[in-house]
Length: 214
Image 1 (tube, rainbow, N blue to C red):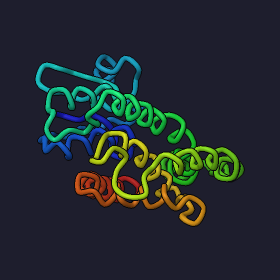
Image 2: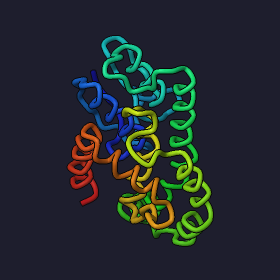
Image 3: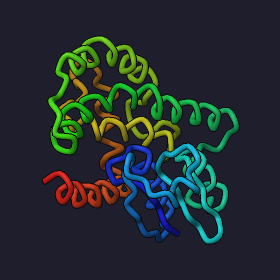
Image 4: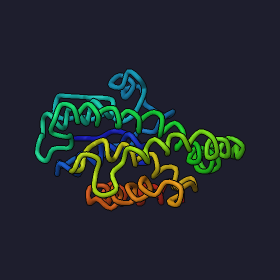
């Protein structure tokens, strides 16, 4: 099994954590957005990462990959048991992958990608607008959804890492969730990051990031 993508991608991270949670052996191959070889574009029609290769199957899209892993390797499960909770989990995963990531990615892009990889000046006004105006309603919603203890659906699921993965990138970019204003969500982030499969995935990332960003 092979996971193609960039270590700091929240989507690649999500899949890597699920692979770790299920105890599956895999290799990684670095594919960087904007620098994708032609052969990668042939297997990722949307030109996005990650792509999972499992035998003869080549599968793009992190959510599709996680669903596939759950169906083919159901133990331990990374989805809730009931149809109702599975539906709720899919929505929360989508929320993390879209709305949360849309805003959490801004500090990372402006403070890391632009100055260190593109040699561009960061747009501090953009960061300020996101932190002060765009993110608070999103965090208010998540504060109302996450539990005071444990994980979203009793045991660790894909939705848990989806609601935390974007915050890792934001943290690299210098932004952390205010624990005084959003205590439940801030505590939830720390619980998820302390979960062993997440710890393992983040350790690999730190090593890769040290080599790439210095």
